[in-house]
Image (cartoon, rainbow, N blue to C red; front, top):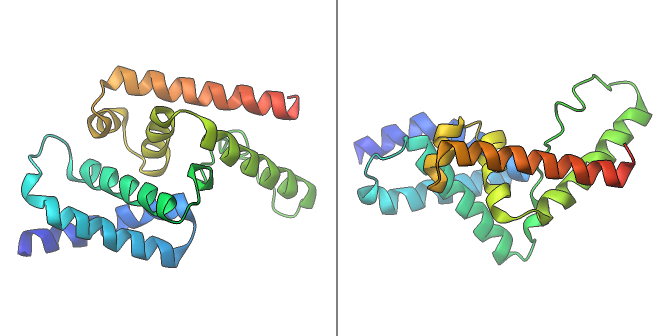
Length: 169
C-alpha cells in the first residue's frame, strides 16, 4: 500500500489536471480522479512497466471519462478539446466581439472533435490534455510513435478543414 500511496501523491496533480482539461468541472474532476486511482489500485498488480506510470494512469483516466460520458448519455461531443489555441493565442481580454467569436469557434471545435474517429480523438486528448510526448501517446495506444504523429497531424488537418468550411476562413 505504501508504494501505491506514493504513486497517488506523485501523480494525483497530473491526472487531476488531465481530467479537468476534459470536463472543466472541479467536482466531476475530483470524482473521476478518485475513480481513476481506484481502478489503478485494483489493477496495479498487472502494471508491468512497459510504459511510464503517467501514461498508464492517463489511459485509465481517459477510459474512466468515456465511461462517465456513456453512463450519463452525454456523448463524446461533450469533450471540450480546444485545438486552436495556437490559432487564438492573441489576448482578447477587453474585446467582447473577439471573446464571443472565440467562444463560438471553441464550441464548433467541440462539435467537430466529437465527430472525428476515435483514434484521432484519443491521440489528440493524450497529446493536448495529458501533455504527453508522442512516444508516450504511442505506448498508451499501442501504436508506433510515427503513427501517433501522423494521426495527430491528420486530426489537426481535418479539424482545420472543417473550421475553414464552417467559417469560410
